[in-house]
Length: 332
Image 1 (tube, rainbow, N blue to C red):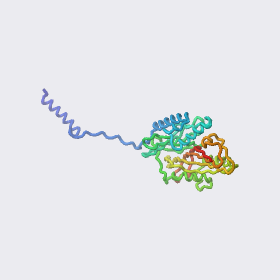
Image 2 (cartoon, one colour):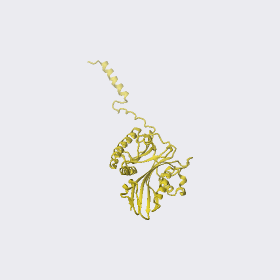
Image 3 (tube, rainbow, N blue to C red):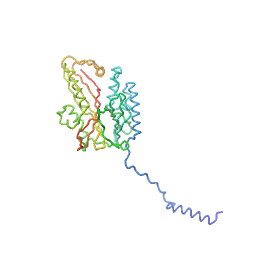
Image 4 (spheres, rainbow, N blue to C red):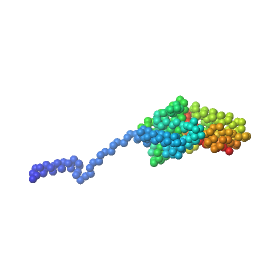
């Protein structure tokens, strides 16, 4: 039998417990939530970015081995899909003498987005390919929450080009609106101005907006070659048309990396005789070996610009990387 003294002590312990909780019938205290991070994480971690690149490499390896563009759909879209598909035609037409462009999937550096919206774009500067060509900038885009990141485009870094500093991958870079007026040129206007410079050269009113430009030099050289190749039987003309919306991500100095797509069309007007196509790739794309009236070559272009902030000490837009790929040939 429990003694009165023991019962009293037990009651005191229970009472003390009730007092310690505030009241036995009241709610228990809830644990305090962990403090929020001072800086929210980006939408892609370094490990996730590496996984995206690994899967892209697997898909490219399978499709390249089979030269089958249908195998690209899982991880390739946009101009990259058109460019890679055309490269498979070229590889087949040249019996493997001209293989698809080497696209390393190991990153030197990455620019990941810090956003809650879609589409989301990541830029990756790759290691140098084994053939010692220039490193590439891979443009990877996620169209919607349930879609994987896909290779939207790629471009080759210009010789001696230095990438501007961007936010650490652990923080992420803010997308820049197309109509942002804090930059030297609004992203939405950039390709229109650049197309005018390609068309008119130094006579363009926008020529001074752009710094020394390896891509413009390449385009002007190939245009001169086209004109020389057809001068005996006709004339050549070239047009440059911006395609779709630009992609822009902030840089550490308040500027932006701007990615844009352009379509270049070279038209050869044949006024006498016919023009024989000597490139087996062009013959395969055109489906014929000669034309007697007009020949049209369509190039898909992906260009990566650095646009400084307005009032910058370096007040010129710089072309960082570009790709100029023949994707269609038609003739009459």
